[in-house]
Structures are given as structure tokens and as C-alpha cells.
Length: 113
Image (cartoon, rainbow, N blue to C red; front, side, top):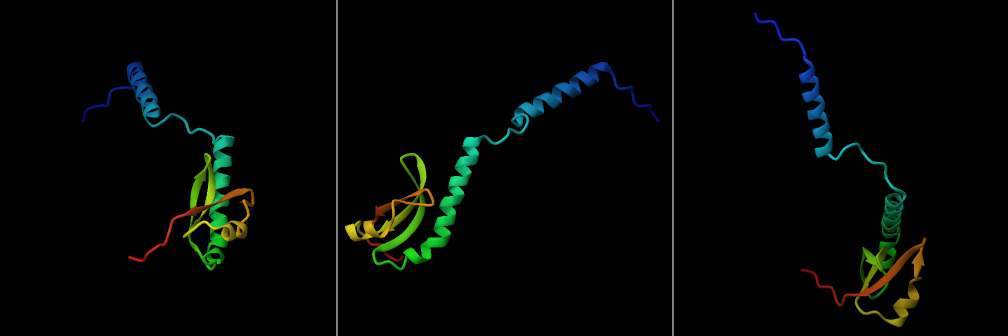
């Protein structure tokens, strides 16, 4: 039976080089979440929470055909989809809810497939 050769200095360098290359290819060390990313996640969670707690109620309002997550002026918002954007519907909803913009979007009549 052959004896394994001892671990040489060249082997150490190759091992270190392989490890460094692997880290670089996999994106290096994990980065901490920035405050901007954390704020974005918080806003998205707020949008989701609003939709979960209000969609059923809003869907009972005549003219409302759906709700969705959206973006308004570069910021996450709640979209309230309506057949026709009327002054009465616009007065029904506040501009903001829990700091999140509510946007009425006219989509026309929605048909079942």
C-alpha cells in the first residue's frame, strides 16, 4: 500500500486559490441588508397587509373589480381596480392608508373566461 504524500506548500497555495475563486464566483461574503432594502421590504409588507385586510370589503363596493400591488411615481402602492373612475368612487377611498398610496385605476368591465 502506498503512503500518501505529505501536504506541501504548493498544495496550500492551490487550496487557498480555489477557495478564493469559489467565494468570488458565489458573490463573496454575504452582505448586510441596507436600510433602503429594509425600508422597501417594510413598505411591500405594508402593501400586502392592506390588501389582505381590505380587499374583501372593497370588493363589495359597486364598481370595484379588483385590487393589486402596484407602483406609483416609483413607490409601491395599492391599486384599486375599478370599471370606471367616478367622483363618487374617488371620494370613497382616502389618498393614503397607513402611509401607503391608494391609486384608483380604471380597467373597464371585467369578464369571466
